[in-house]
Length: 136
Image (cartoon, rainbow, N blue to C red; front, side, top):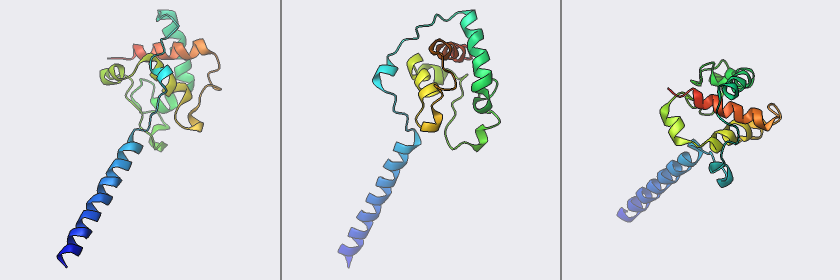
């Protein structure tokens, strides 16, 4: 009888740990390819670039990410994904320009691929420059 209880308890602990591991894997599933992690922004971070990036951001990104980048756009509450606070120092220290580019335009889901929305490569990098300018 004791052996059955020990076996049951061990099995229960195993299932709980397995569930926690699966939760951690799905909690932040970003898998940014190495080439994007080290990719450098080819567009100089100038006032003009930031201005262009802001225009594109306002048209293509603000409905989810919010006008100020806090992740509070009108569509944000209907999404089941994490929207980073693009103004936080933590966000800016955590991601390279290449990672921001990948997350912003290629994404992790097929519906999140915005390369067809923002077709010009330079425009995409202008958005990265604008996002960098949001840091508080």
